[in-house]
Structures are given as C-alpha cells and as structure tokens.
Length: 87
Image (cartoon, rainbow, N blue to C red):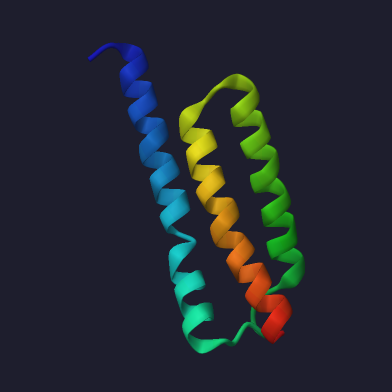
C-alpha cells in the first residue's frame, strides 16, 4: 500500500468515528422525543461547521470529508428538527 492509500484509510477511519458518534444522540432523541437538554446553539454551530467542512471537502475533492460531513449533516439535521419540534 502506498503512502496516499494509508492517508486516505486514516481519513476514512476518522470520518467513520466522528460520523458514528452522532448516532446515539439521534437514536435517543428520536426514541424519547425529548430534547430539552440539548443546546440549540451548540447544534446550530455544529451544523454550520459541518456544512463548511462539506464545502471544503468538495472544493478539494476529499472524499472522506465529503462523505462523513454529508452523513453528519443529515444526522445533526435530524437532531435539530427534533429539537425545534419537541423543544
């Protein structure tokens, strides 16, 4: 395996870890329909950061960034939707 494939593998592993880390909150919020302990401001800032990383990844053609932040955007959007709906 050449150096770039190792670097890409590390990128995909990091992306997988950070993306999967959002799942427990999505599942808990979806199941319980309770979001009062979730900070709206924090999730809005997180969503903004994810969008910026997604655009950055797109601009430089970095697939680990594009895929992980695309999925992360969807997961954080679910939490934000539930937060706005259920407070």
